Amino acid sequence: MQITRRQLVAGAAAGLAANSFGFFQDKPTLKIGLIGCGGRGSGAIRDSLAADPGVVLHAIGVVSPDRLNGCLDGLKKEMPNRVKVDGRSFTGLDAYQKVLATDVDVVILATPPGFRPIHFAAAVEAGKHIFMEKPAAVDGPGVRAVIAAAQKAKAKNLTVVAGTQRRADLAYMEAMKRIHDGEMGDIVHLSCYWNQGGLWTASQTPGMSDAEWMIRNWLYFAWSSGDHIVEQHVHNLDVCNWAMNGHPVKAVALGGRQSRTEPIYGHIFDHFATEYEYANGAKMMRYCRQQDGCASNVSERIVGSKGVSNANTSIKGEKNWRFEGDRPNPYVLEHVRLYDSIKKSLGYNEGVQVAESTLTAIMGRMSAYSGEEVTWEKALNSNVVLMPEGFHLGMTIPVPAVAIPGKTKGVF
Image 1 (cartoon, helix red, strand yellow):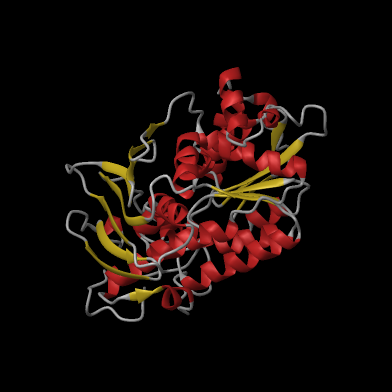
Image 2 (cartoon, helix red, strand yellow; image 1 turned 120 degrees about the horizontal axis):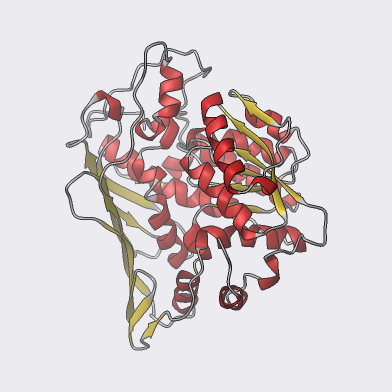
């Protein structure tokens, strides 16, 4: 990706320093360790390398050798001078530990979300700066672990940036500034959507253990993905929490599984609808589904007493506004923010923020699975750990039963 001068100026105007691009050229090379190299991991390392020509991929760790080889082959063909992993490529469940034991400066955490709390805590303990993909966890204990590690990272002045790229989108940033400055008055209602068709699947081949299959087919198990309300819809929920400068206090949800009922889809739902309530009484309605052949909608709508913001690129009301100008790729700009914070020793830290947005999504799943109202405290203090106990690659793991609202209790 080429960054134009106009994009640099736009980034600087938004507080993303223009000199972040290329700022390591007069310093020792910044070394990146990539942990997880599926679709998002491959995308994240490309975005990270695009954000500054003076950084290199120094180490990589993935579970499966075939994923490692495919990822490295592609990167070496695209940017051979940026891939310097000689002798520092690792496979297996402990590959993350081996990456952290190298001299990398920054790690990208992009494994299935069920592993995120473990990897994040280990990265903080190792003293690494961190880019971690969303969501931050899949259950209450995981969220608590991420919050604790984020606080430890803050004490160490480590930079933590999360993959909630809308927070690095110049249009969203300008809209939120205006909302927080009161141009729309008091926020009285919010709604957000991630409605789309189905996604990829991975079949279990002969000789493949349940554990390995679940890692490859990770979207479809709550222990690995959190269900799609957590894994995907967290983006929109994060925007609403951003607008509110806080998180909801309770949720009531419904959901189910109608179009994706085959075993390859594990046990997750294919649609959710949730009503959230914030501390000031404002309500948020949110919907997400992954069903083929249905209308698509990925957006947020924020209603204030003096105006409405649609998709956070415009405001209609007493003060009309529409974003104009360059809008650089926010997937790259979030890495610019990472590097800028490291360079200036700012200790920029999004760890608690992404953990709270993750728990917002988890509340919705818990309520939809159980049919109960779920409070913030109940979700945060839950002791239900979704990852199979003693997880290892050879495990036999029965697929959990599909939740039935009103009947499913205690397993969220």
